[in-house]
Amino acid sequence: MSSSHHDDDRHQRHLDGVWHLCHTVIDALPRGTMAMARTGAFWDRHEARMTDPEQARAFAAELARIRTVDTVVNALDEQRTAVGLSKAALARAIGSDASVVRRLLTATTSNPTLTTVAEVAAALGLKVELVPMNETEKVEMTHPMLGTSATATSGAA
Image (tube, rainbow, N blue to C red; front, side, top):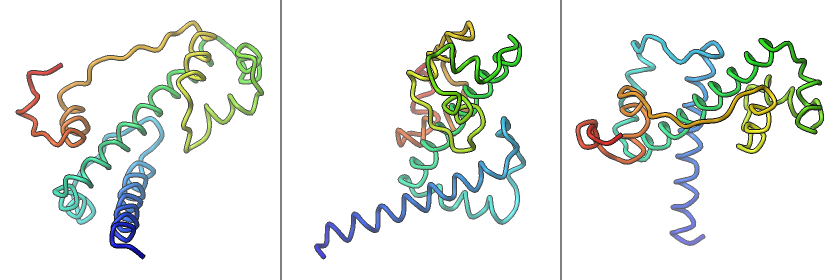
């Protein structure tokens, strides 16, 4: 095995570990919530791991994915309930199988395409928009992903 191939394997195992860690943290939280006390041995180990820029970047990227999907899926399901539409009726509205909508709204590891989200949102009278993160979110996600400190990009929106 070549040295670069060995390094690639080690890097992938490292990222797999970060992915697992992130899911362990997020899966411990009730659906739709992301806030919890960050004290104890687990968080001490987590903070130590986050001193590695690559682990911090990978964790922040996964955190952004999980928070975004969770927020969008919850909003879609809340709107579906508010307008009194069944999952099957919503599926018919977007020309899809009911299983697609059920998976979107109930799967714990949902990864919907933007196309599906846009179609479901439109059928529910919603549209998808991007909004700036607040400063806390930037510190948790943007800064580690860019490898910058909080002060380096605080003026950027």
